[in-house]
Length: 357
Image 1 (tube, helix red, strand yellow):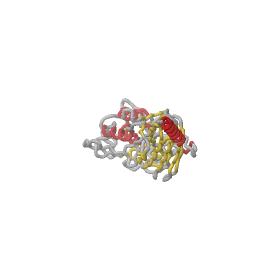
Image 2 (cartoon, rainbow, N blue to C red):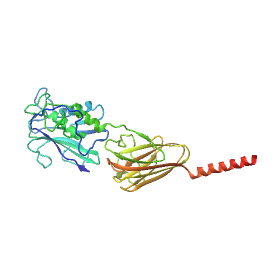
Image 3 (cartoon, rainbow, N blue to C red):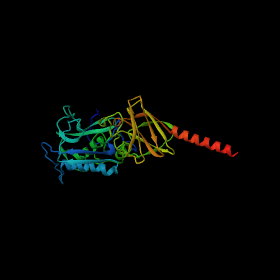
Image 4 (spheres, rainbow, N blue to C red):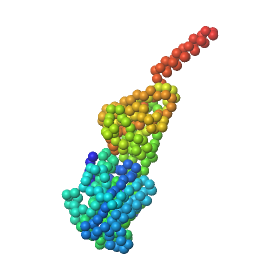
């Protein structure tokens, strides 16, 4: 796993924006949460301000965080969903436990905030999958909760909206009207530009079944492709690998094969970019009939004797969130036994015709 760069929200004053279409920014290394969903644990108590802001109606920090998440949940129209569990503390410096937390802190786990920084979002990811995200709010800032134009006390909720946007995968947007601007301003909720960015990250057409036959397919996995979990596939048992070494959140492509006669399905999968795995599912997409894997640069090969019917070949990486190129070779063909029977039947038929003459 790697830790992606820390994103800072600056408090250097109000920015004025000129509207620009499709100007949203996605992180330089695109990453996302499976299904666009994650849960943050929050039990926010400020050492001097207590549990809430001061502007009427008084709003607790936890409630403000809940409302900030709700703005993304509503605006993204089902593409992403952030759950806030209050009353449960998660240490934002406990990196590597797979849990997402938020807190008021005096520093960034030993590093300095910097004089102009209000908050930071830090994400840990494996491949392109976000596995942990934490938000730290600078304790020494004068915080409050309110809508409308910016005041001397900084609005906790609009900063929370911004940092949640980073966790979802958005970068800073400097040219359009966006809550993801690098500096705090009068905007306090996601704008069209921000939501377009979420749509670009989380819109997919899962599951997609690609009709395939006897062919060689050169393709690649990208971060907007389906994870196996998003396509409704259970984590497969891959021959030669332990269950713990096979990730659930790996990109998949599903190829639909139709066998008109009994025969063999032969599959070869190779990638220069990731450990490849290939397996065959039955028509219900629930039973793993045959599987295999290979390390990066090598070929995973399997052969399965199939009765007439529909089957699905699934190409994927072994590890979670790996992107890159792959080549899949599909050879569905009648079995030698079937060919022999057909040949003998034809020969017998030919002899009968000769006798009639």
